[in-house]
Image 1: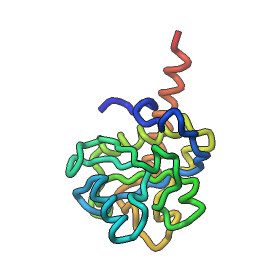
Image 2 (image 1 turned 90 degrees about the vertical axis):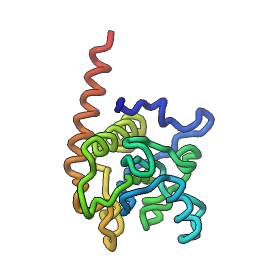
Image 3 (image 1 turned 45 degrees about the vertical axis):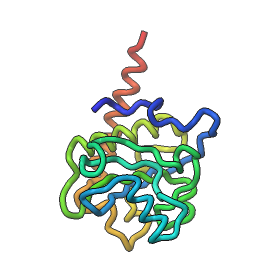
Length: 174
């Protein structure tokens, strides 16, 4: 999979980038899924105004492996409905990775894609930092999300490596 380019995830040019401060990682807690199914669940079961996340990343079961879909919340730069904490929902980017990582770790290609997305967001959003990548359970203690097998320390290390590579590429450009 090609690295995530800002042009692929940027909100529309006429929409101002929100002052994001945190990236909140979630898993879908199901082995199969897609944004439309999550949107229906959030709208019908939870009575929200649609999908609560800003991005969904596919695991190859329900949507292609590594495919990143930006939801209406990202395209409009509107608050999330994913963290269980109003302040975090206001300034936290919610990323849902399809899979149940309480049962098994994510495919390495999927974990790499998540790190790519986080690095792309941190590179463009001034208040974001690697240290501000958290799991849903770090915000809402009553959940196990994003699961025991999605290691946030490893994710942060991968993101640091990707950010360093981006910087090196910029510095070596003619």
